[in-house]
Image 1: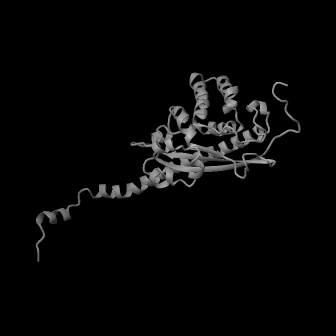
Image 2: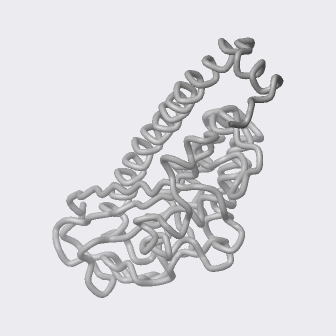
Length: 263
């Protein structure tokens, strides 16, 4: 029978550090639970904002669809198929809003930026105008560090004023606005349903690995495929949570015809 080494025997009898070891065993699951609660709180907050974005887009669609064709480059009423949105369109429009917010804290300057004719008629398209109405409420959700983040933290998850700048290049690729039930890009019924799908980037360390997925594994990736261009997918990493909401409203049309431009 092999005799036990005196060193091994003394090591097994040593009780120093037991309390610290027990603390580590108890602390890790508690800390993980806390991080998950924080990340869930951020996801719940984002869920409410996406719902508000869907409401905003639906309200815009209800009045934009039957609006004067002269305001949208002659695009027919109730049409959503002309001049699809591009990332540069949204980034340019959001840049105007961002410049106004950074240059002055005056409410008048902010209202002026949002009511700018070139901003309202973004891309001379009803579709682009509706999508812009969905983008603006979600600007505060833009992450501080888009994509791969080697050092995530709760502070970064909370964010800072840099989110405004991040929104200019993140939001155009992270959000999709679709219209369930729409046929051939034309609204024919008395109601319009707008669906907003958003890829919310999870940034709480550890919890994001448990609660969120990679971009390619999102359940809503089919809708987001329109927004996340192939170029963006190549450099956007990190973990995401797909959030989706729909809002249906009556279309606010009027029983009269608009004059042709120039008449």
